[in-house]
Image 1: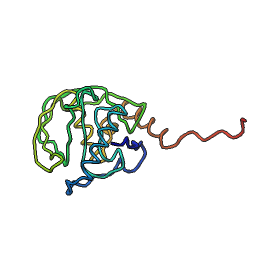
Image 2: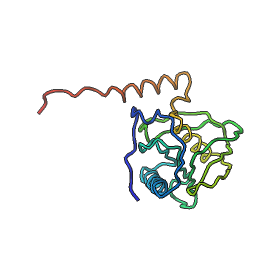
Image 3: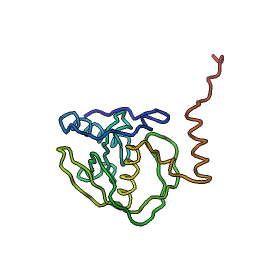
Length: 175
């Protein structure tokens, strides 16, 4: 397994709408293994394929952040079927380091996806796992968590992202 470089804002791949997976062969398995390793190494609780530069509808989620290896969820071609409740919690993103903000999302989700062999399945998630799934599925549509913010939180995020797009110019001189 390989730790892949995580793409950071403003990389255009983070705004791409990803294409569905049609080939469930060894390349997909290798990508998912590398994504899991990358997510755990970061460390994070989720990672979507565009965050490692791949425009495919693939995400991995581990609400235990690597503590329980059996808790890793592999979501290929996922879609949210149903949501319930409302929850507001702090979110961050491996692709937007050093920025967090309160985001309101549904508290629980029902998701349909495929596994690495292409078999369809459905699952229910709540709390952190539900939040992580929604966050990663947003990535597959080119949506960043900052796009979910409103009011002053949105203004704060826009200011932060502007600084990422236009880094401070280097100062000349100063041996």
